[in-house]
Amino acid sequence: MEAKQNISLTRAEEDIMKILWQLEKGFVKDILEHFNEPKPAYNTVSTIIRILETKGYVDHTPYGKTHQYYPLISQADYTNAYSKNFLSNHFNNSFHKMVSFFASSENVDVSELEQTLEIMRKQIEKQKNGLK
Picture (cartoon, rainbow, N blue to C red):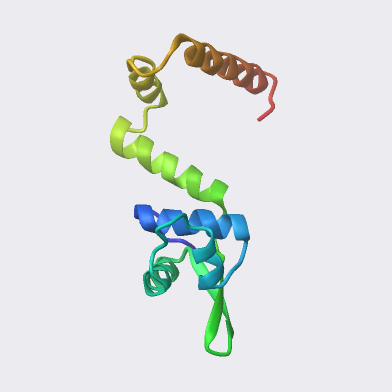
């Protein structure tokens, strides 16, 4: 089963996925243990996990009346798909427009801009040299 493209996760779904990525597999009670207080209800977490299964992000192994859940998509693959969707929906697939938008933000300090520029310079060199 493959996660359906263009189906974004809610905040609650993403919170559960982050826990599952960390655990690699777990029962609802294991997932609940990783929430801060006040923890969501057991039934709430169980319902959200079933929704994640429907969306193709999670599957399970049955053990009697309980299920052990595991992610079907890696965190890196989700982040990549989410980033592409974000770029498409908000910046017309233009990396340049996105970087310009954030670089001109009042919340970005000079140090962060310099670090970003250094990362981009290194990536430019790698690509020029045929590396990824």
